[in-house]
Image (cartoon, rainbow, N blue to C red; front, side, top):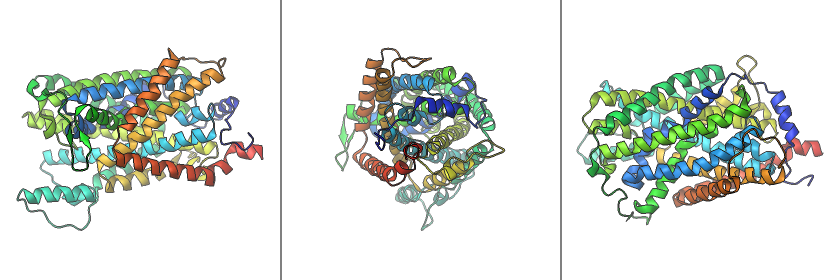
Length: 493
C-alpha cells in the first residue's frame, strides 16, 4: 500500500490542519447560511430557468427543480455529516482523502475545479445579460460585439438581419461586461474573507427580497393557460435530441442542478468558520431547504406569466415581467438580478480557491501558486488571481449553455461520489465522533448515488464527451504530477 493510489490521509493529519489554519475564523452559522444562499439564489432563478423551460421542460420546470432538489437533499445530508467530522477547507475532496483514498479524492477535487470554474463563468455571462438589460432600461446600448461571445454574437446578428435590422459587420466579439465583473469580484476576494462575506450579506438581503417580490407580484399575473400542457409533448431536433416530455424534464433537472451547488460552497469555508463542526452542517441544510422552496415557487410563477417558449434565455425573469407589461417590476428584478449574480460569482470563486488551497496543502497541486497566503489579507491571493484570469477569459468567449452544462456534470459526479464515501466511512470507522449524523444513511446514500448518476446520464451527449475529456486530463495530471508530489508519497519515501 506504500505507493498505492488508494492511500488515505490520516484523520489526525486533519486535526493538525485545523490547528495550523492560517485563515481568519469570522463566519458564524447565519453568515455561512447567507453564503450558501448567496451561491444558490442567482444563476438558477435569474438565468437557467430560461434555458431549462424554453428548450427542455416547459411549465414542468417546477418538476425539474423538485427532481434536482431531491437529489441535492440526499447529497447535502452526506455533506453535513462529513463537514462535522472533518472541519477543513477542501469540501468533498478533503472528505474523500481521509476515507476512500488519494486517487478518488483527486478525481473529486478535479471535478470540483470544473464545477466552480464553469459555475462562476456561467454566472458571469448571466450577469452580463442582466447588466446589458439594465443599461437598456436607461437607454444605453452597447454594441453587440462587446456584450456577447463570438458564437452568440453571430447568432444574434443573423437573427437581427433576418428581421430587417441593420447590424454593423464585426470580425470578433468579446463579452466585455462579463470579463470586467470577474476582475471586480477577484479584487474583493483578494482583499479578505470578512469584506467578501459582508458584501455577500448585503446582496443576499437584496436578492431574496427581489425573489419574494417576483413570487408575490408575479402570482397576480399568472395565466393558467400558459401551464397547459404542463409537460409538453416530446419533440426531436435535427440531431435526434429529445426536447420536452419526461426526458426533457430530466435534462432540465440536470442543467439546473448547477444552481444548487451553494451548499457545497458552504463546506469549503470550514477554515473560516467560528464553530465548523456545528455551523457548517446547519448552514448546508438550511440554505438548501430555503432555496429549493424559492426555486419551485419562482418557476411556477415564471411559466405562468408568459409562455415558456417566449422566455428570454439570458434574462428570463426580467423578460417575463416585461411581457406582462410591468416596467417598474422589471427595473426591480433587473437591478436585483445584476447585484445578486455578483454574489453567486463571489461565493463560487471563493470556494474554488479554497479547494485549490486544500489540494495544495496535500501536495497534489503546486504550493507556490495555490497554497500561498497573503501576509496582510490572509487570503490565497495567487490562486484567486489565477482563477479570475481563467474565468474572465472563458466568460468573455463562451456561450452560457455550454459552460452551465459542464458545471452540472462535475457537480453531479462529485455528489454521487461523496454519498458513497460517507457510507464507506460509517462502515470503516464506526467509532469516530460525528457531531452530526445523516439519518437512515444506507437509504440516503443509495438514493443520492442513484439520483445524481441518473441526472448525469440525462445530460446531452456532447456534454458527456466533454466531461470524459476533462476526466481523462485529470487522470493524466494525477499520474504525471500529483501522485509523485503528494505529501503522503514524500512521507513514505
